[in-house]
Length: 251
Image (cartoon, rainbow, N blue to C red):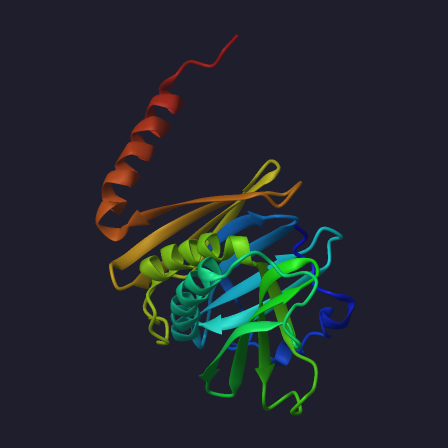
C-alpha cells in the first residue's frame, strides 16, 4: 500500500522562516529518525533564545522535504492525539478503495497554540490511509492560504508517537525560557568529524550532550551525560590522556 497522497493533496508552499517559533541561533539538542514505508521522518528538539521546540521534517521517496514546528506543549498534545488516531485506525475495517468517504476524512482534530493551528486529519484515498498534519500560522498566512503539512502513513502512527514520547520524556512539555546561566556551547573538529558540546536542562536536571557529526555525510550520533557525572567522566578521560601521553613514541 502506498503512503503517498493523491495529486490534489500535494504539499503546499512552506511558510516563511520568519514564522519559526523561536527566531535565530538554533541549537539542536536531540534527534530521532524514523523510516516509515517510503518516507523518512526527522524529529529534532531545538532550542533558541525563546525556548525549546520540536521540528518535524518529512522526506519523501523523491527527496521532497516538508516540515512542521511544534512548541513542546503542542507536541505533547499531538502525541496524545496520535494515540486516539491509532486506536481509531485499528478499529476500521479494510480500505474501501471503490467507495472511499466523499472528502476522504475518517477522523479530524485541531490543536491551537498562540497564533498557530494544527489540523489533524486521518484520511483515506485509493492509495491507502494516512494522517495528514497541517500547520497554519495566522499572522503570516491568510485564511484558506497554503499550509505546511506532512503525511504520516497510518501504519506508522504508533512508531511516530513512541519516538515523540521519548523526546518529551527527556526534555519536558513546558514552553519555558532556557536557563541563561548555562555554559555556552562549544565545538571542535577532528579530521572529518565535528564534535559539539551542548549543555541543557530539563525536569531531570542539567546535562551535557556530546554530538558527533560526520562532515562527509552529516550522520549524527550523540550521548547525554547528567551533570552529577561530569567529574567522573572528566577523570576517566584525563586518565586515558595521561596514559597515552606517557607512552614512548614509536620508532
